[in-house]
Length: 264
Ligand SMILES: Nc1ncnc2c1ncn2[C@@H]1O[C@H](COP(=O)(O)OP(=O)(O)OP(=O)(O)O)[C@@H](O)[C@H]1O
Ligand SMILES: [Mg+2]
Image (cartoon, rainbow, N blue to C red):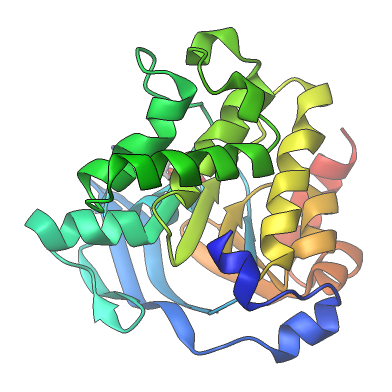
């Protein structure tokens, strides 16, 4: 895989020191839905190779944050840059941005009427203008990596939720993104399928992929994240290492939130 070849880090401390230049930068970002101030003065920088976990109560703005970074939502004020470039308004540059920012959602968003293989080759051929033979070869490699190569000719509905979500990851990776956004990628899965998806994500993190992951999976955060950001009511309330955050949260909001998710 492209990202894996460049850097292979296994030790979190080593990964920390190898973080690169800012890749995703949000400066003073504000967003309203009507009266609701859903993103409030968000300042956030994610460096190349960094894995950021975003955690927080329902309605705190986590999905809106992800969608704003991918420009699926516009913002009212502030600035978002990907690899130094401001988010484009529309057109071809926007399509290119969407390719640079891979996104995996909670519900599996595979094209229902295309095979697994077609799901993974479509973007590279249409947007990246890759030759279909090259796209196919790469798609099969990626499907192999996420453990579903033998499902390549099936339709999405024939796969389990965990398999579909791994295909969604392969599909995003096929676009050779600079950063991957995951919005609660395991929350719609049956428990026995959660780990097969998290394992793929942990491997991706260890290979040096820059990732922003909305998740309440503490195991993933502890294994893979450099940093945890806790959001509440549209604000970043707390930022810490996973260890600090889960063992000694500082704010009352975070303490309250953690006591609720831990008591499940
Ligand atoms: N398109 C929209 N129009 C109006 N309000 C919206 C829209 N999308 C989100 N909201 C509201 O904005 C707030 C933040 O929503 P968002 O989906 O970002 O929260 P979240 O932290 O992802 O929550 P969850 O954990 O439930 O996924 C919520 O109050 C939500 O109801
Ligand atoms: Mg959400």
